[in-house]
Image (tube, rainbow, N blue to C red; front, top):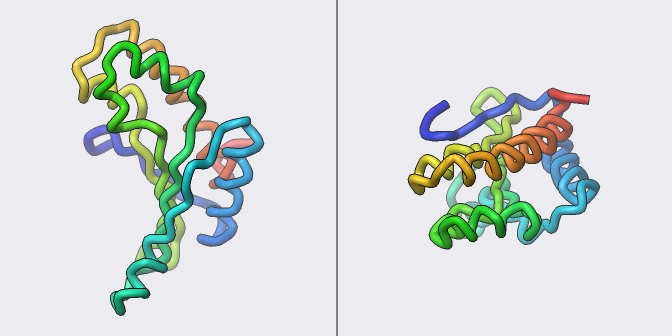
Length: 134
């Protein structure tokens, strides 16, 4: 884990993984704020980029308590997950571990406890999207 970055292999192709992530975010009652197609943006300027899509999502009940400990945490929220395809055609999902965010901001154990709940939530969403958990 490099600086709180978690990367999970997917059992599914890129589009299937992206669509499963989208569906799982919504199924858990979270808001999907944006779905950014980085590879589409690259294509618009004539640059090649393997399939890469960023999801920005969350729930105010989950993130606000962390921001109440330090508003600067808002730079790292809402949660983000990146679905990407490597040069061998394998799909992966990467995200920042919320407990790492508390370390980054030097927050106390109360904030770490709040972030642990967010850790479990994003791990469950990504696990379901990638087929790594039932």
